Structure formats: C-alpha cells, structure tokens
Image (cartoon, rainbow over all chains, first blue to last red; front, side):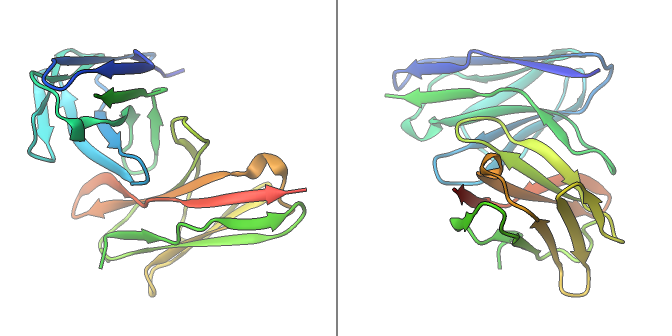
Length: 112
Length: 111
C-alpha cells in the first residue's frame, strides 16, 4: 500500500532563516506529488506539484521553491522565511481522475 | 464567485441527527469531486469520491448536481466521532484533475 512520510511535525523558525521540508513516499513509483499550505482559518492552497523527477510546476509566486531529486522524494525549501510563510504544510500523493489525495501528516511551521 | 465555496459553519447537531453540507463550484468543466474529513490539527483524509449517480458509504451519502454545480454530503445518525471539518475538493477541469479545495465546513456533534 502507498504510504507517505513527512517531517518534521512541528517547526519554529525565525524570520529570515532557511527552510527544508522533506516528503518521501513508499509503495508506488512515478507518483504525482504535491505541496499544499493551509494557513490558519483558510483553505488548502496548492504551492507546487511534480509529475516526475526534476519536473516542478509552481502555482503561486513566492519565496518558496520545490525540488524532486528522486522519484519518491519531494522537498520544499526557502532561503529566507517570512512571517507569512507560517502555516500547515502538507505533502500530497496521488490524485488523478478517480483517486483523491493521500496526505502526509503535515508540518506545522511557525515563523517568529 | 470563488472556485469552490462551503458554508464554514459550525453545524452544531445532537447525536443521531441527520446533517447535510453543500459545496458549490464555479467551473462547469470540473470532472472529479471528493469529500475529505479533517480532524483538528491533522491532515485531511479522503472520505469519499462523488459520482454522477450519487454514492453511499454506510451513514454517508454524496451527491452531485451538475446543473446547479454543487455537491452534497449527507450524514445520517450522527456520532460524536463525526465531529470534524469536512472539505470538498473539485477538479479544475480542462484535462486537469488537480483539485481545488473548499475551506471546509465544521461539524460539531454533541451528546
């Protein structure tokens, strides 16, 4: 079965510091992977998605970036965090016409 | 009009009640529809897909109304454990199955 791992669970970072969140999946190959952010009281916002190694589509221009160095690894990064980057970051797996997403357990990021 | 809209609630219902949520969408080309459940401070989990003919899973029934562009979720015989936020997700259409999520409807089931 497909599983998705995401870490860390909680992160408190100062403004201007870098960020690296990692997501790895098991039990599938060539998955579609997604990064979403859920700000407090708001809906899920798609940040990036990837259909394969090295293939990244950006949805929202911002100071975040994503990379897919391996088939089952998806990384979200920032060189300098802003206060507005605070939120609940979720890695999603799958999708397609019939399947919904499976989400990782998420990282709750607070930028201070 | 927002792409996907939901009444944020909260819907406060007693155990055993029947409750229904709607979710409206603006893109008539959308082809895939889903309901997710999100517990407090947890990730959303897929509850059920929504098919054109409607579908049922135990106490949960999902329906699609293409003419009026909304989907619905009906929960019968509510349990305390049904308390959560329910998110709808609607694909963008135009060949893309990437969903747009609603902000969610909060359900509180009380004794």
